[in-house]
Amino acid sequence: MRGSTVGLQWVYSGSTVALQWLYSGSTMNKRRCELHGQIEKRRTNDEQMTNKRRTNDEQMTNKRRTNDEQMTNK
Image (cartoon, rainbow, N blue to C red; front, side, top):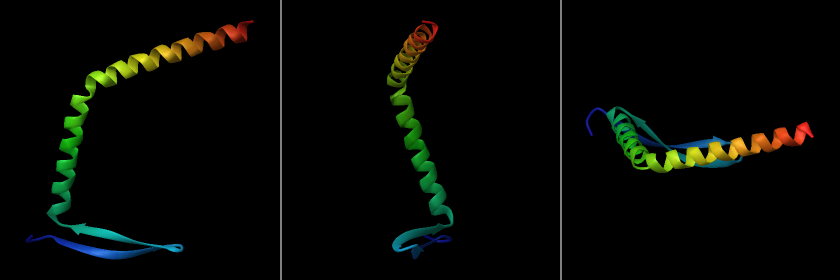
């Protein structure tokens, strides 16, 4: 791990005390890229389910809108 440091720091917030990892150097960037890659992979796998969910949500909102309009017009 040349060129990067990893540290542990106590963080005080009101009455709670928490441990926080501090990253500096290239390790944090590498982890961000790996996490981003995993997120991208997950996003492409769930794309069909997301499209189904989106159309269902749109249909539900359209139904609600027409019902609300009918109720207000009465």
